[in-house]
Length: 147
Image: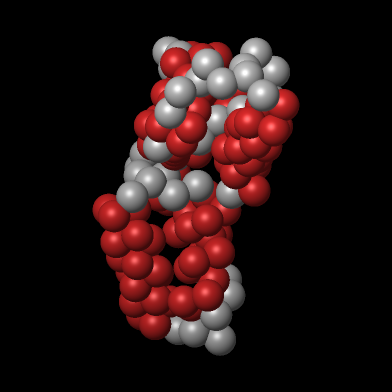
């Protein structure tokens, strides 16, 4: 069992590590928890530190989801893939839905730009090219309809 001074020192180390990670980029609560567990071998103080970071507004799944959505959409990733990745990072479905609803992202424009960049002339209409485009869009997280 840790005495009070050792516990306080460990808490400070864990908090500092969490803040260092958050200073580089936003993290979801689950991501940060996993990283801290790897670094501090499952310390029982991690849950308390994460709660403190939430209370201090340093850790916020909504802010993480917004940053992630805009970052990935700028890179040409589609909404289906982004939703899936956010879920795998432990973001609640309600948060994901809210962030997508409140965003002003024009998915059709992004979809068109991604296709244009990859395939150039989009007037080509042979079946093989359409199938390649559809597979590419699905892989990127877009629906294959409306080519």
